Length: 207
Image (cartoon, rainbow, N blue to C red; front, side, top):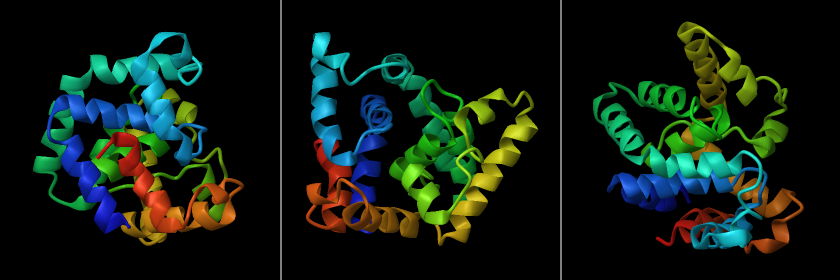
């Protein structure tokens, strides 16, 4: 699943700044929304108008638009990190530390970005918090952004990556999450199987 779908997303995302912006917007649209609904929400958001506000509620509106406004900066930074990181762990930590400070993102969604565009990191979302019995406050986005010192933020990013590594790494996190969503959640009937869950990452992006 990861080997098949993540590389498709990564190739798409890093082709140009506009594509990366769409991937970041996809990540924003996954906040508190089951994955099977995101393709429709993506279409609604792109069409704009009054209907778009139904999916871009609260902070999502600002975050969604910021992805497009800052597309060139995000692409340049992501490209530089991916091209120059000496290890996968460094790449993951640098991407997460950068994107976690952006509007609408925290450690979990920044980790998701790293997973999608570079095959590193991962998303410790509400499902994975439940799976791994993690205190939901441990990696809270507001807690991270309230840290004033860069050293403190980087230490929190390192702890986040320690959890991912302890769970078997990026690929295992992706595949395990897809299996969990397809078999254990209240929306499991929306998916044929774990493969179908994984495919939705590409379906939502039209790739």
